[in-house]
Amino acid sequence: MQLRHLKCALPPTEGISKVTTITWSLNSRRMAVVTTDRIVHLFDENGDRKDKFSTKPSDPAGAKNYVVRGMAFSPDSSKLAIGQSDNIVFVYKLGSEWGDKKSICNKFHQSSAITCITWPHQQHHEVVFGLAEGKVKVGQLRSNKPATLYAHPDQSYVVSLCSSPDGRAILSGHLDGTVYRFYFDDGVLGPSNSKLGTHPCV
Image 1 (cartoon, rainbow, N blue to C red):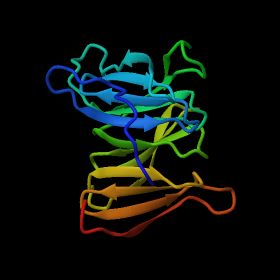
Image 2 (cartoon, rainbow, N blue to C red):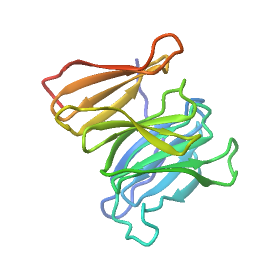
Image 3 (cartoon, rainbow, N blue to C red):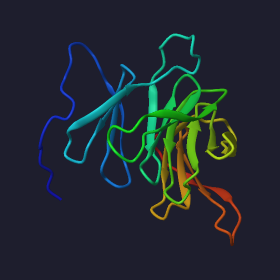
Image 4 (tube, rainbow, N blue to C red):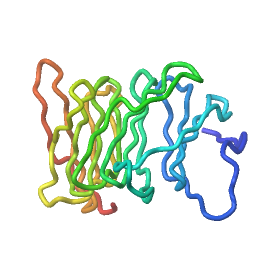
């Protein structure tokens, strides 16, 4: 594979403004970028910025001292889930076209910081996120309630999450080097999880 630099999508600013997470939509038409200023920038497939919006703290009256730890587009690319260090996941409805009105359609408050997030493309109404306390949870959009998929036996911090190519399973990586796998209920076999192995690096 040959990589070629095409353009600078987000120009540099004065001072430190670290990019904390980037995600592409499944239809490859949108890219979302957020920095430490907690503003989400939305780009089209050509890298041109089309929109932006500010994220919100979990406590409306609270200070904006959180960090966006992860973002994931819904399978139909019309929603964006945002996991924050102030113990909450927001799901924003973006619409299917540029300029559509944006609104928060779901909130999932948690007891510890969100560390990572993924949205399996076969789970249209379920977004998966990891917590600092070692749990992997699913946010159910239809009921607006979270549920625990599994918990690390030693409460090891969830450092990473990814979805399988078929959208029916996820992997989680933990601070102690362990990797766990979870299968969703496919109508034939029920949900299951197991330890896949231990990696020498986090």
